[in-house]
Amino acid sequence: MKSDLAIATLIRSRLTELGLSRGEFVKRLGYKNIAKGIRRIDVLCEGNIEGTKQFMDVLPQALETSAEIVTLALDQTVREIELAEQQETEARDKIWRENFRGGSANLHSGLSGVFA
Image (tube, rainbow, N blue to C red; front, side, top):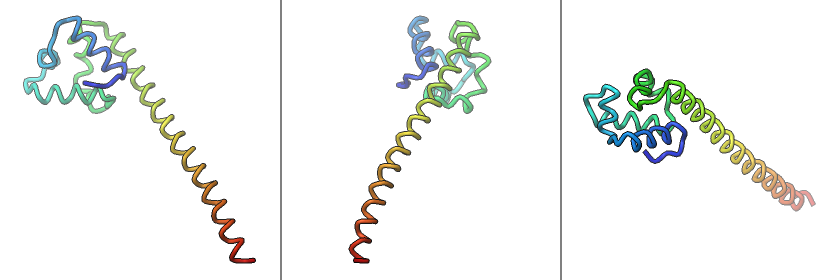
């Protein structure tokens, strides 16, 4: 659980405050297969909210916090992911535009010699 997303931060801080291990936490979520539960938590903490809907109802209780706090963290996580995706798209577009302009200039200079 290395992510800095809001949901990961909430889970990490609550586990620390409650003195829970990840194994104890996934037991609270209802998992009998601890390794599978830990993988699911890692998926959630990396931002895959859709793939972890099965335990969203018990997450507040397992963290001993309100549903509102968990919902706020999930909403913030979605915003963080959207922002990161937007920034990544803008960076890719900028690189493409720079390469396109450079490639276009090179093409014109190369063609001018052909038709001279």
